[in-house]
Length: 171
Image 1 (cartoon, rainbow, N blue to C red):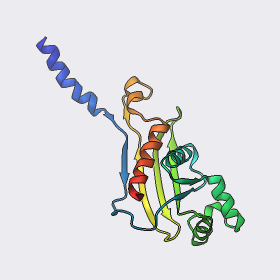
Image 2 (image 1 turned 60 degrees about the vertical axis):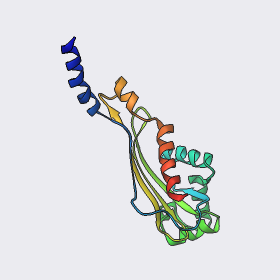
Image 3 (image 1 turned 90 degrees about the horizontal axis):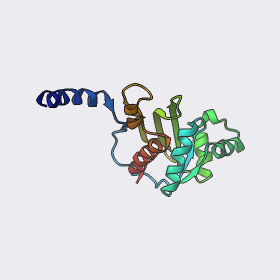
Image 4 (image 1 turned 180 degrees about the horizontal axis):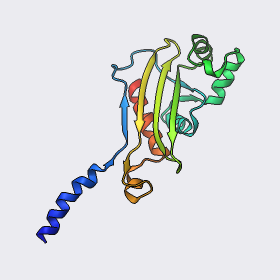
């Protein structure tokens, strides 16, 4: 009995150390003090993760301009979507009622869960980054194992964490 308890006490820390929860790192600037952010346009190319973040932001009261609408707004003034970080595109988006542009770059695994993400929110009125963050999914043990499935976040959970972090920064 004692040996079993001792073995458990020695093994559990190693098992816990072999697992990691999702991590999020944010820009270290102070609180955002610029104009209020009511409408966010999504840059093209963000994929399923950007779409899921958009749904979360919309559910929290933010007006969302999806990447297709963003492309259309820029196209009406002759600006390519690859020029989204230019003063001309910011002016066009601002004229359309957009307060900020969100660029999402994510890496998805084969099973459809997100691996990592990099997110940057830029004010169209000032052209400065309002919030930047990186997100890394958790892991545990061998890919597909019960421990790994327990530690990893699905698309919905990841987008919820990322949108919550963004909202804390702009509110």
